Every structure is written in C-alpha cells, then in structure tokens.
Length: 175
Image 1 (cartoon, one colour):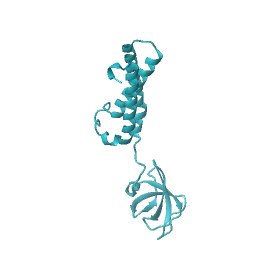
Image 2 (cartoon, rainbow, N blue to C red; image 1 turned 90 degrees about the vertical axis):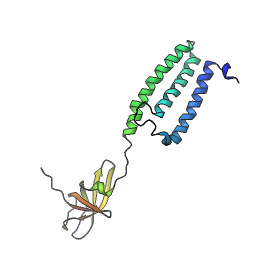
Image 3 (cartoon, one colour; image 1 turned 180 degrees about the vertical axis):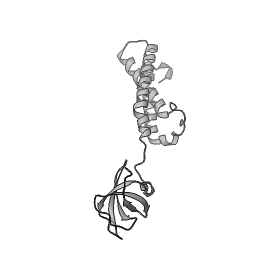
Image 4 (cartoon, rainbow, N blue to C red; image 1 turned 135 degrees about the horizontal axis):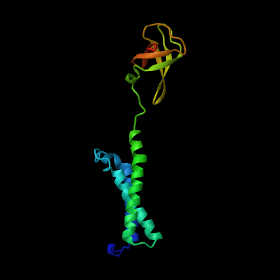
C-alpha cells in the first residue's frame, strides 16, 4: 500500500484512527504532559487533539456522503471542528478544571466553623457535633472548651481541634 495512492477518504480515515489512538493514550498518560501549556489556555493537548480528531472525523463523513470539492470539505470540517472544539472547551473543560476541588478536609480547616450538637456534651465528657461543609456533613467527637454542659441541638463554635476532638463552645451570634 503506497501512501501516494491513498484517496482523500483514506487520509481522513487513517488520520482519525491515529488521532483516536492518541486520545486514548492521552487519557491514560495525560498527567505527564499536563503542565506543558499551563499558561496558554488554548495550548492544551486535549483541545488540540480534539480539534484534529473532529476535523478528521468530519472530513471523512462529509467526503463519504457528499460530492463536494475536497478543499471545500476541508474548510467546512475546519469550521465545524473549531465550533465543536470551542463548545468542548467552554462547556466541558473549563467547568471540569474549576471543579477539581479535593473532597478531603483537615482538622485545622474545621476551626472557626459552626456546628450542631447531636449528642449532648456533658461536663468533663464527650458528645458529638455535626458540621456542614461544602463537601457534605462531617460528624466528630466534641468536648466543651469551657468545661460546661452543652445540650442537644445547640449551635456551637469550633474553637480548636486536637487529636480528632473538637473543642467547642456555645455559639452566640453577633446580631
């Protein structure tokens, strides 16, 4: 099979197959090259590979199903690929990048938050407090910071966290 004897449809098809393989490889090994275009938003390997893959796939489909001129098909494929690529970038990649927030929390990050007592905290004893965060509801062991009893369903302020135990006092809002 001589490369010079390939038809335009074959070029599109083989390009599409090659680019699809590159996309799969990038899916598995993309973390290695993630920092390459960090400062330039459109120099993103995902965006570039997606554009080329869309171009090859659309070019192949339009070549097969129409009798248009190959140059016109290339232009149509490029324009449609650019539109699809922009949609992919603005509606999928940007929201995914901003959603990359860790679901983990640290004990130190709980300090200063307001929680609710679900198991009463006795004097010199332990109870349980729940804290609502953006990651969900966290339930932790708690004791009184001032060594006073805190009843069920009270709002408490987390003063400090030591060895997984919340030290709390009753919450007194300013207003």
